[in-house]
Image 1 (cartoon, one colour):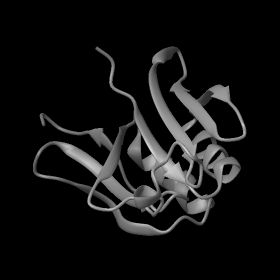
Image 2: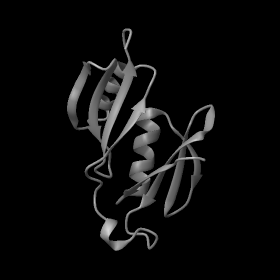
Image 3: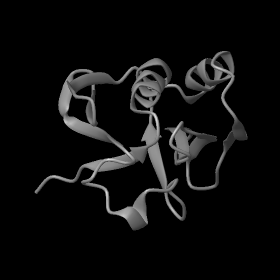
Image 4: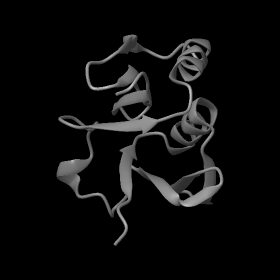
Length: 124
C-alpha cells in the first residue's frame, strides 16, 4: 500500500514554487494540471498538487482545504521558519516546543491549506 496526499490549488505554478523553495522538495512529475513532488533522496515520499478547477476535482471540492492540515517533519524547523519569514509567509504560530516532543510552527500554503512544519526535540 502507498498513501499519497494531493492538495487542490488555484495556482499550480505558484504552489509548486512554494514547496520547492520552502521545503526543498523536488519535482518528480509536472503537467499543466498536476504536479508530483518528492523528498530529495527518497522519491517514494510524494506530495501531489492538482489544479483546483480541473475536471478530476469534483465541483463540491473546488475550495480551499479546511478541517485538515499537512505536517512536514524536517531536520531543522527553525531553519525552515527563517526561510518562511524570508518568503514573507503568513505565520499562524511561531516555533514553539510542544508537549508531545515536537517543535513546530504553523503557516499556510498557496492553496489555503494549513501547514504544520516540525522537528523532534528533547526526549519526545
